[in-house]
Image (cartoon, rainbow, N blue to C red; front, side):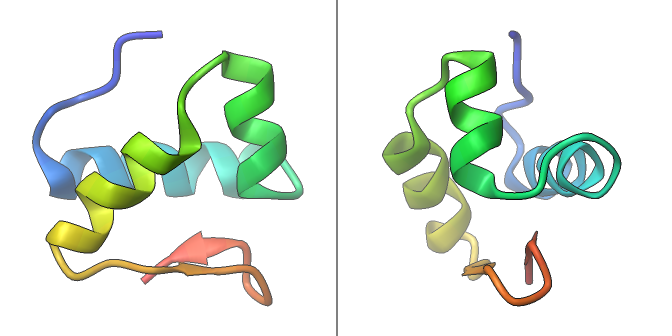
Length: 58
């Protein structure tokens, strides 16, 4: 899957998929075969952190 490089767009895509298709970030990453640590690093660099209780990056 091609994910956007822009962290705001990346967060939007990830959060939309989490809301609509996946019950956790880990399941999304496994299903799409993407490195969860790489995504987390990009998003954390932009100030976003995964909140498992709401299944979103904020």
